[in-house]
Length: 69
Image (cartoon, rainbow, N blue to C red; front, side):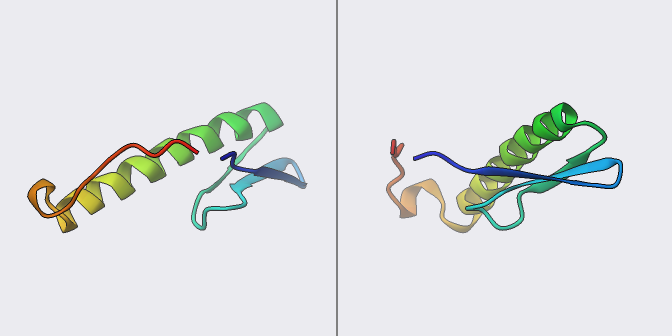
């Protein structure tokens, strides 16, 4: 599975977001900085979601496995 990054220039800033994931968005002064910021935002999003999931569903109550798509 691949995710889709979308970038839009508005004035002097670029806005970027992941099409498939609500809440993963950022901005940057340049397209390159926006791309880097979006990678950071995606990393933080998945890290936080994982931490919340581990709190809600402790190890002993569920089966976790890697899923490659």
